Image 1: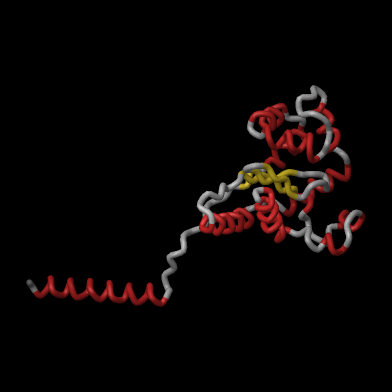
Image 2: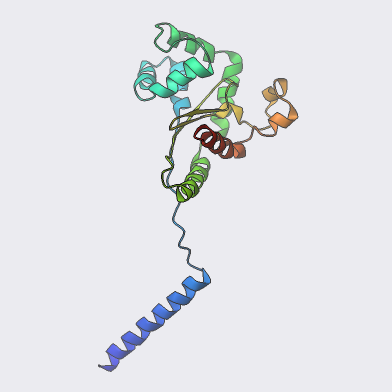
Length: 203
């Protein structure tokens, strides 16, 4: 073996030995990256329909978000049946109320970016999948419930009502909720609320 080859082998062995030592010390983590989670902004599509009367947005609600639209109209807001020919008009009238518009404005201000929530959901679901490989990651979307249900749960669905997580000091909350309730109506409560309710639903 030439001197150059011997030097190469020696360096390679040193790298391998150092690598084993580093792994043993835990300086390189074997933990996998959290699964990527996307939160669907159904609230924005609804807002486009309400604010602009957009027929395109209404079509998207009925074709791209049929489950979300049905749950919102029939179960969250109780405006009637989703196939009622007048229900879209009633939905728009409902959301054009000045109080609801105040909620929409604050949601726009606070929830432009949801990347932190997507990351937190990703980590939570990764841990659940490690414990139970059969765990089904749900589809997550956002809505404005007009201070009705905070979290909507379906078989493989989580709906987050952003208007219920505007912070304990949001002025409108003081007219409807106790200080104890308002203390939980913060952004940092969304993931824990959603995951715990989803797990309870699937017990």
